[in-house]
Image 1 (cartoon, rainbow, N blue to C red):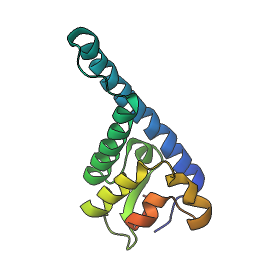
Image 2: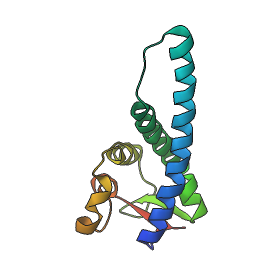
Image 3: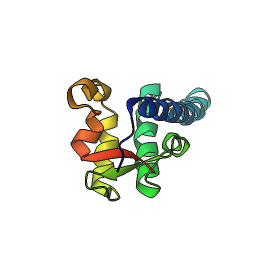
Image 4: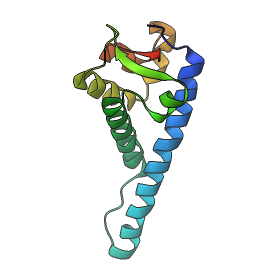
Length: 125
């Protein structure tokens, strides 16, 4: 089990964030149409972005064990024991991602907060 480096993780983050942004922006624009033409209640873009972030990571990592960014870099999510991460681990991992302070734990824990609290690792395939 070879843990991926920080550069690979940054590339994964950039690719996945672009995808999540595209999903959230599309959903937001569709909702805006209803706001303008049907006077539906306005919802901030942040709700769309963080909802898309949670759903994207949860579904991709639960169903495939990896996201599009991880597919491109030949890496995947596993539990600390090296086996496939469980649904609870993926849920906790996805939930911890939506905190703003997630990435600031790297200097202290040598991994992001979502890896630490969910007891998972990102490894090379």
